[in-house]
Every structure is written in structure tokens, then in C-alpha cells.
Image (tube, rainbow, N blue to C red; front, side, top):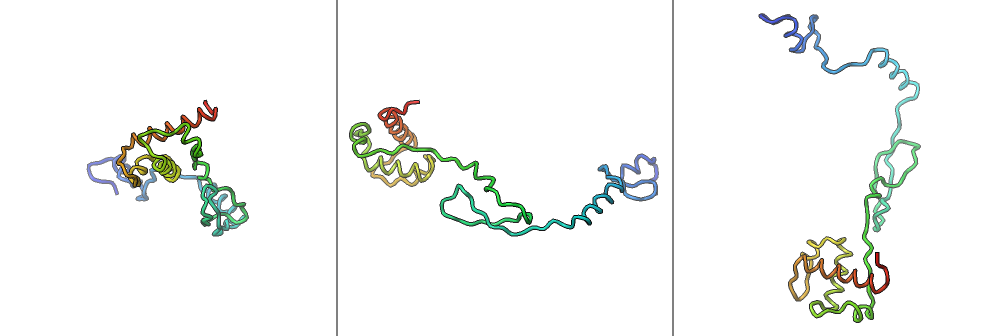
Length: 162
């Protein structure tokens, strides 16, 4: 039914065709394409899925995770494991500390604690400052300065300059 005062164009814009059937705003596929898909689906059957276990190679705790996967498809490496990057942090011996790293502002125990926290929190110095339980209060910049100074001096002493 056409609206009063409006032409056929206005009626089509409202979403109805001349026959009263709603007009599709998206292009539809021809019926032959849909029949072909239905035929292929009937021949091949529906795809089967199974609840499979997998492990994330970037985790070290052995956690077993599960997800849905097509039946018969081999389990591949966890796809997001490639984003897990770790920084290699140089470790020092007692001799290296006394020879190259000793400074009056930092004790060996504080430097040891800083190095452990940098490994634990993956160089997140805000977290390191939050978890710091040393005798003296330190700023984030102080942690960064000490960490990178230690790494630089160790690399120079070992001839790892780059």
C-alpha cells in the first residue's frame, strides 16, 4: 500500500516493494547459488568439531588449555605464543660485582633484589618500585639508571659491546 502524498520511491525507501514484500538493502545471492551450497553441504555432511587440549609453549607451568577444533585437524603451536618475548638479562658473579659494579649508593643486596625483580616483572619498573622492600626509597628513574648501568658495565667487562 502506497503512502498518501508520496510516490513509489518514498514507499521503497520505507522498506516495502510494490507487492508489500520487504525490500532487501543488502544484495542477495541468486537462488541457484544457495541450492548449490545446500547440495555440497548434503554431500560432505556437517563438519565435526572436538574439544581438544593444547599447551602454550611460552608458559613454563605446564598448564593445559582446551579449545574447539575441527576433527582430524592436527594440533598446531598455540598461535599467540609467538608474541611472548623475553629480554635476556646479564647476571653477575660476586667477583664481577666487586670489580665493576660496586657503587656507594647501592648495596649488593639492593642490586641483587633489583635484578631479581627485573626478571620477575620483565623490566616493568613501575611494578618493581611497587614491590621494592629495600631500606631506602627509590624512584623509578633510580631503578632504571641502576639496572641499565649494571647491564652496560657487565657487557663492557665481558666484551659484549654492540
